[in-house]
Length: 242
Image (cartoon, rainbow, N blue to C red):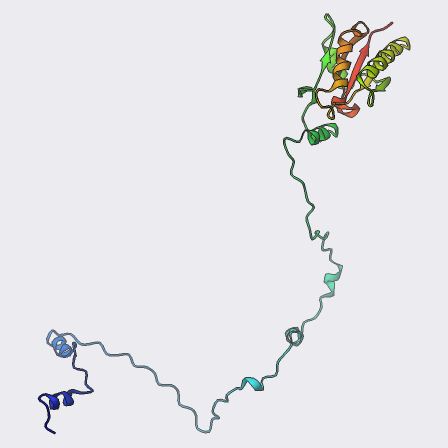
């Protein structure tokens, strides 16, 4: 079969790279006085000594598994206890869990009053809106300050809790008149703060109204009690003599 034109030339070039961009580069460098860099020689691996055994191949199936306890005992070989450490005080043990400390709510008035009554805060009752004091015209303003600080010894008290307003009013009048007849000078009236009242603190307002009104002729001064004696839920009353 006759060869097609160009077949012999294609066959002669088959299997050879026809593009050589660096052909003649060495000659061009030598003409410019440059010497091509030589390749670094790679060191040959060391020859095995005559008679040396070839490296053994390790088969995973031939390895005996070792437990964690055996590994620990192997690592601890040669370790000895230092008995001098037994007498050392390691200090108090820290608890595993921290005690939960609730975050205080600045708008929680009941919690605030509890801290005031327990004297765990610097807040003064006299700075609060519920604080009340009074002296009659021409009286001594310093008396209410001393009264509130608890400087006057309370000689008797009455508790109006559980009474309706009319019953509490009668009981208070009888108590104060009886205290004057006995020659008492300082008494305490417990009325509460009216926190459970649907509106205003009924008993507290009633006590203030009577002390400044119908009973004012018997009163030298009155002031909200010290925290140790009930704070905003009680009132000190300083009585005039007979």
